[in-house]
Image 1: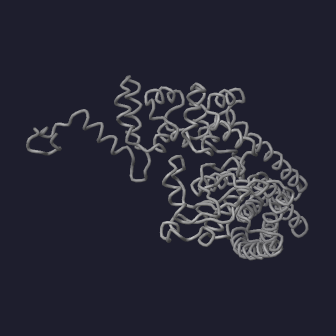
Image 2 (image 1 turned 180 degrees about the horizontal axis):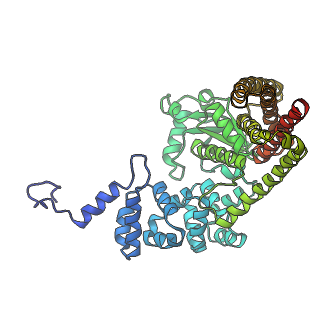
Image 3 (image 1 turned 180 degrees about the vertical axis):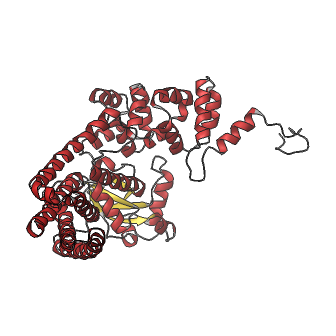
Length: 478
């Protein structure tokens, strides 16, 4: 068969065939930021709506599984099932593992247990667990019963560990060799065993009790003479991950020690799995996003989350904020006569609380991140408190000076300007202390500081800001 452009093959003279158009659309499906183009998504949806499943498949087939997952997530929920059905086996195990949790649950709910079991068998254990763990118990059991005994045992073992633990995150497909082997024997072992995983960078060396005593990078083995003993080649210092360690702590260890993979051990120190950096990258992103959203009270913040669930999550924190606002309002009520005497205080007191709230939020964000990354310990907590207090006092002094001058130019009252400046300074210092002490206290009480710190810090800066400003005004201006 002659190639395109061969003189033996007649040219189209600029006339594009349907096949050419499909290929061109597929090639331009992603923009320069590797996001699906709106016109590409529309072309796929239009093809499915017209019943032209072949065109839809031709458009989507060149895409990476992660991009196919993006396509399904961008599809309106009411049309998602039709698109998945039209794409057929293009929506495979790898695509399911890349999908948003809520979207994946919708699609899996429409599949038979045998189909889910087939998908799970094609994935690493950690990815299969991610698909199965959120299913209803009856559906989960049906899927497990449809799996091969070996795959089922691996999934059930992983599900026995706590959620968001290393046991759920690890994969069991790894390469471990006994300590008595030589480099040549290891190479022969890798070549002769077709059932071994092909995705590995390190080989673990274990003793007779299957406890890891060291590891070798694959490059070391490939560049060493065959007669070298694994005991002489391996590196004995290694970072071992307990099977029940929280996934956030796992991510911190990978980040701290620049790990590519790490062995996971049970309570007896036996090797039971490994965690790779690709899983940890996902966890780092997930945990960081959770903390940011919790600080704002927005829950998971997932755009695919059902509306009623989102409303319920946000409404809880809005009601809590309403309560703290009522507390701040009650403080204002204590100084009703002062405000009646100096009406301009009503316009200025919002500035005091607002500036304090912004300062508190800045400090809080820094502290929550520091706590999450283990930068705050019992040995440096006092130093952190002093540091943030000094920063707050400095910022408060500068802001107080500027606001004092500004209010004097506007109102021409020296006493009011001094009270205004003093209130700004004091509330900034309160904000600095609250932004440090509240998350640290919650963390020491085993409460996630990202969940409720913002509410308490806001209550402190609003209430004490109003109290300080109106109290000083009562003492010196009335």
